[in-house]
Length: 169
Image (tube, rainbow, N blue to C red; front, side, top):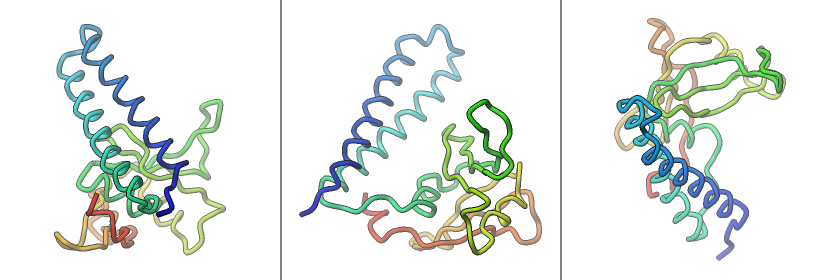
C-alpha cells in the first residue's frame, strides 16, 4: 500500500488548526454574538468531521480528492457565490474567479481565465454574483452539477463525475 504522506500531513495539520480554532471560539465566545459563535462552531465541526473522514481514506492508501467535482460534492446543497479573486494587495483580479461557499465561509474552487480550456471560465463568469448550488442528478448519482438559482434559463453551469471513493469516506 502506497500512502500519500504529503496529503496526510496536510490533512492532519488542517484538522488540528480547525480544532484549535474551534476551542478558541468555544472558550472566547464572549467576543462574538452567541448565535454567530454557534454557527461558526458548527462550520468548524463540519470541516473537522470531513477532514477526519478524508484522513481515514488516505491512511488506507486512498487517492487524493479530485479538484472540482469532489470539492463541489463536499458543499452539496450549500449556498455558493461566484466572486472575482483578489491579488496580494486586495485589488480585484478579473482573470480569477472563486466559487465561495457562504454556508461554510470557504473557497470551493478557483478558476483562472488563461488556464481553463473548454470555456469553463466563461461559463462561470456569466454567473458572477449569482447564488450557486452543487446538486447531484439523483440521490446515488456520481454526477454533480453546479446550478444557478438566479437563472431561469440554463440553470446548469457545469457537471462532472465525483471520484468513485468519495461517498465511501
